[in-house]
Length: 500
Ligand code: NAD
Image (tube, rainbow, N blue to C red; front, top):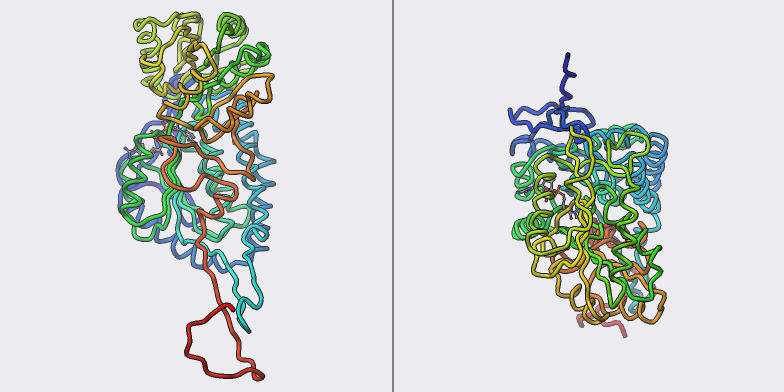
C-alpha cells in the first residue's frame, strides 16, 4: 500500500507562500482517520521578525488607501469567500474533523464579519463640532495602529481569524495571523483569497508556529496590538506579557457555559437546543453548552428528553454524508475527554449515556456522546472546561440556586435560559454575570454588528471582539481642535482657550 505524500504547510509573507527555514515543524492530522497528512512550519524568532518587517512596510502604504478602495477589496474578498465556501469547508473538515455543514456554518458566521467591515467608510466616521469656541471647530478621527497580530485556536480556523482580520484590515492596519498549528491550512486559503481580492502584498501575513512564534509577536516592537482567542491559561499569559510590553491586548479564553432550564420550559425545545449546543462540533466550541442546570422537578423529563435524542445521532467522519458529529482534534485530547468521563463516574455522577461505549469508527480520534446526571460543583467534570462531547446535568431546587451556581463559576462566556416566563428571562438577563446570554437560544454568538466577549476568566482586556468594539480595538482615537486665520477677527489673546 502506498501512503499519500505529506503536505508541507508554509508561511504566507509578502503575498506568497514562503517555506519555513527554522528546521522545526509540527505534524498535522486528519482526525477522521488518524493519519498524518501534513507538516506545518514552525517559525523562529528571526522568521517572525522578517514577516513583521514586511507587514510594517505594507501597512505604511495601506493606511493611506482610500476608504472606498478598502471597501472594494472587502467586497471582492466577500464574494470570493462566498463562491469558494465549499472548498474552504473541505479544508476545515480535513484538518479539524467537524462535519461539512458545520464548517460551512463557521464560514458563514465569519463572512458576516467581512460584510460588516465593508461598511468601513461609515464605521470610521468621526464627530465634528463646528464653533466649539469662537472660530474654533473640534473633530475626532480614528487612525490605524500599524501592524496588529491575531493568534487563533484550532476550533474555528476560519471564523475566528475573520473576526479579527476583516476589521483590522478595513481600519488600515497590516494583519499578521498566527493560526493554530493543529489545522493551519485554512489560513493559507484565506491568504490566497485576500490576494485575489486585490489586497496589496504584506497586508495579510501568516506565520505558523508555536510558543516561540507567539512570544516573538508578543515581544516585537513593531506589533502594536494582539487579538487572541484560545484557552484561559494562555489568554492570561498573552494578556500579561503583551500589556507588560506596552501593547493593546484583547485575549479571549475558555468557557463553561450553563443552560438554566426552568420548570415551565418547553422541554422538547430545550432538549433539541441543548443537544445541538452540547454535542455539535463534538463539543469543541467555546459557546458549547456543557452544563444543563435543571431547576425544581424538571430534571427527570429533561434527562430523558436529551438521552432519547442521542441514539439518533451518527458519529463518523465529518466529510461523510449523514454524519452528525465528527472526531476530536487529536488522540491526546480524545483520551483526555474520555478520562473526564471516567472521573465523573468515579466521583459519583450517574452515567446516563457513556460515549466510551458507543459504536464509533475505530480509526481516527472519535468518542461518542456522554450524558452525566447528578453532577455536583465539586466534580472535575463540572469545574474544568472539557471541550468535548460531554454534557453534565446539575440539579438545583430553585432559580436562585441555579443563578448562584452560574455566577460562582470562574468562566463567564455564554449562558442560556429556557423558560416560557418573560419575567424570569428578563430577571436572568439582568442578574447573570456572563457576557453573552441566550433566551431560549442555545449558542448566543452575537451577529457581527454587535461584539463578542465573555466576562471573568473568559476574557482578559477591556474590549470585546469584532463589531463596533473591534473597530475601536484596531484604531486609535485622535481629537483635532482647529482655528483658521480670520481676517475679520484677528487679535492676540494669551489666556487659556475657553469654550464660552
Ligand atoms: P490554545 O490556548 O491551546 O491555543 C490557542 C493559540 O495559542 C494557538 O495559536 C496556539 O498555538 C497558541 N499557544 C498554545 N500554547 C501556547 C503557549 N504556551 N504560549 C504561547 N502561545 C500558545 O487553545 P486551543 O486548544 O487551540 O483552542 C481551544 C480553546 O480555545 C478552548 O479553551 C476554547 O474555549 C477557547 N476558545 C475560546 C473562544 C472565545 O471566544 N472565548 C473561542 C474559541 C475557542
